[in-house]
Length: 220
Image (tube, rainbow, N blue to C red):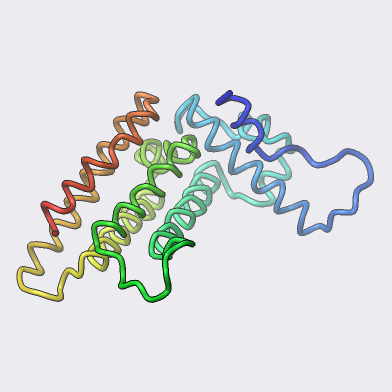
């Protein structure tokens, strides 16, 4: 069942023969297939063990097509990482949106509730996109300084988002509570990474309650 869902989500090859797709649509489709192939190949073989030949084999494109869009394996990895980061960054806005059945006159949700929604979306996305999650949290360490800079920028952004949710800076002890945001993100990243390495996606989702409790103790 899980395998069938993963195959359904994987972008397929372009139709053979004549088609009505624009050049832009063709390039976008090829790019998505190569980024997805990169994540899936590195989930199986790791960054070091994945070659450009393996990526283009899985994506079903030519070597020429690969190098039309990426300078190297590292460049492809960095762009896949950037795409994953942008997807994660969109979670905060989704977490802040009131539920569809909430009355318009209700007060803003308590910080704990907003943080729980953000964390729930984050963990769900990681389990549904586990190949990209491993790329972001595990293989990034082997991919060079540019990739690590993107990863660290995301962690700073996530810590800032949590600080905003819990109104850090609106009252005393802001420096200590800002450090608490950074420590919370670092702890979450380490715990999530451990479950991804073990391919324990159920355990990954079970992190929601203990991480919410930790956030409330540190920042509530």
